[in-house]
Image (cartoon, rainbow, N blue to C red):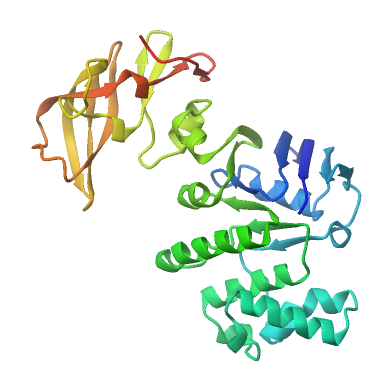
Length: 342
């Protein structure tokens, strides 16, 4: 296990500032997720940590030691790419053993470690096959076994599940988290998928335009977003925002329900003009317009289908949100204002 730190790291590609003065630390044994839309610097930051790119300014540290000028092989970090990067002409066994053979490990030790890694990922029966004979999920397991076999101080995983179908991606996510907990290896994971980030991360670092906008637990990121970008990027549907003087009022769709559903008297109640209803099995998404304190706003409500209330397009119903579930954001800076509304 190791502590991985990016200290005031920036990376420019001509006029593009891919990474912009990032200060970030992955704690020992932590599963840290880098989450952002595409093209916002997360993969570039990963490559800087791995040593595949060199920062324009700043340093990369492993366990407190600066490794900025060191090549990837010296850093003892294993990286798993989105494409898995398996050698097509080699068997699964030789793919897994490649990093061990590259450093001159004995045949006896190689055999022992390959069997251990293959057993961990349940691919013992695949050792004599070539990558073209494997499914997507099996290739992903081979790539992870190859990363594990060298017993690195940290794993860097660059969207390793994105090529899998939805059902397999869910099971692979659960297995990946279990393996990481068993190994206790510091892991930095890149994704643009919120479900992956929320389900895998001990902490999530949300990036945008090369900057870290917020770092926190999944609960902190979702319920206490630091600014309007994080508020509207996290969540599907995203947080509702309505104008209120010098601030925006923000609340999650699941917190905005027909009046009478929420208990207590400390609620904000708004007339909700219903424009569209989507039935999604376990829930309904209700799209419409509210007359806010200052202006009209498009908002979304998420209603569990076990709440028996008639919702029809064209109706105007009173919907409420508890004031303790409302966040405020300054309209000028777009930053969250601490404290609930009164």
